Amino acid sequence: MFSLFRKKAVDFFSKEEKEKILAAIKDTELSTSGEVRVYIENQCTFVDAVDRAVEVFYSLKMQETRHRNATLVYVALKDKQLAVFGDEGIYSKTGKDFWNNAVRNMLQYFNKENYADGIADVVKKIGDALALHFPYEAATDKNELPDDIVFGK
Image 1 (cartoon, helix red, strand yellow):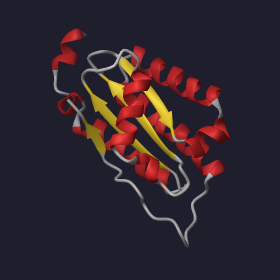
Image 2 (cartoon, helix red, strand yellow; image 1 turned 90 degrees about the vertical axis):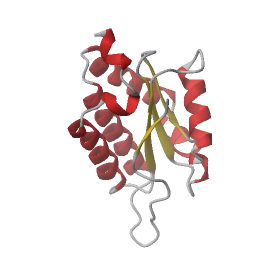
Image 3 (cartoon, helix red, strand yellow; image 1 turned 30 degrees about the vertical axis):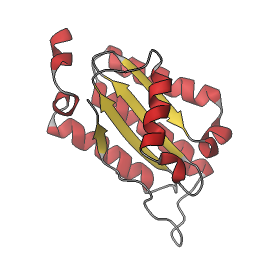
Image 4 (tube, one colour; image 1 turned 180 degrees about the horizontal axis):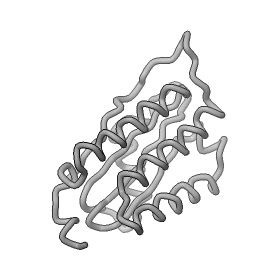
């Protein structure tokens, strides 16, 4: 199994797996004014993946959404670390337990080596929470952040 993690993050997922993750992001954003991004790299440069997720979140300027309702799904493949970080708008509506459960859910998939399914599923669950608290506004909604998967080092 370890040899899987020697691949570059961008090459880790098959085309179909990337498409599954992208479809989850796009589908999620059809029902909410919220934004979801996925950031994948091999190594986490911090001891705590949440600290790295926060750094990535701000470097991608995700805090600049109108309702402060952007969410980042962060995965460090080789270091086997992950985090989900929601901006203050969505975090204040969902609370700490929601985010802890999102990580636990993703870990269940990851423990079975179903990485793309785990990411897609957590994106959908985040989307459900975003849709509940920040429904899609046809008259005013715009896609504030790109929907692509961001691959780091």
